Image (cartoon, rainbow, N blue to C red):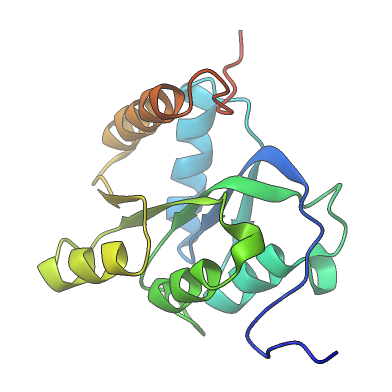
Length: 162
């Protein structure tokens, strides 16, 4: 039986992984540091463009090993990425019923109202403006952790290092 072209078949294997879709290496590094300083034990995987993000979510190519690259519980998604932008990734993701448990937080520098509206229309769970410095990013990650724990009680999956 043929499958629809825009659908994917994946083994649903959720871990407490966070997938960061970000093309700016400085923002990737700052986010990794903020996760560590916020004492989040969640593995942080990185996709550098929209095509890589979809390949990760599909479990294709180098992301086929779900032990090394588990499906994320949270997708931190930049809107302005090469190859496919964040809107395309979000639209694709929300068209995959088997991935409906993946929460999406847009994390971008754009506070342009049409971008915010479009992100929510496409199914984003949160819209966060990238902070201008490392300290503000740490505060944002700490708020994100608190939000996630409250939202997902009693089974919150954001892990805290002791």
